[in-house]
Image (cartoon, rainbow, N blue to C red; front, side):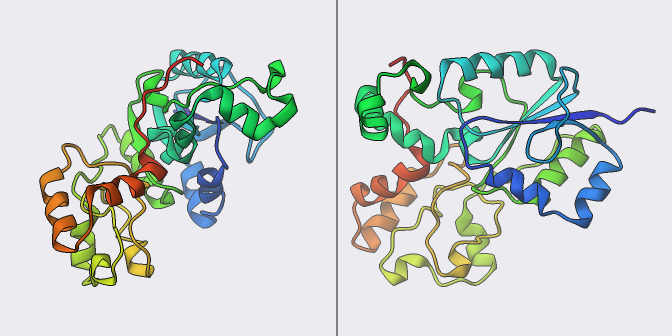
Length: 249
């Protein structure tokens, strides 16, 4: 029986999520025993137009990339969005808070109008095509990716956490970051990272995106309890959760 073919693609990103895969060491050998990578620029030179599972890292920032994502979706039986840039636009989506002409002038100065430097408001992959599964985080947790892939190969739907990071913080008996005078996005952010940032002395940055139906009322209560405002919270949300709709420049 032939192994499922997997192709990994990158759009606008730092490719840090793919590096997480490369760094899996022995575990990647186990994964390769059950799948056949046919395209992955980070690790192999082969290219293919035939694959069963497509994994896309990065956000869409150009019209030609949008067309590429559409073609990938047409060929793939299953499409996985990999990392914050792919699942919700990530840090790249900060650009959407400004006029595209201003962004180009700021970045490219006198070359801003060059055709090959054209850009557009950032879109997550699911703003372009249907995404079957998402692996959240910046960067991803490699174990979560292998879990998702193995579930798919076994014909099972992977279970992605849909409760806030605060739950994991409490399980790890962390002191709440609000006690340190910080604004933490744990009450709104999807768990699954084992509260990695709060457990290492940082507030939650929100890189896994919102839980479904986040408890905004509870977040407001936390803000009030610690003398913070909703504007303080919104400032933190901008890094990974800029929500301005992507439109043509």
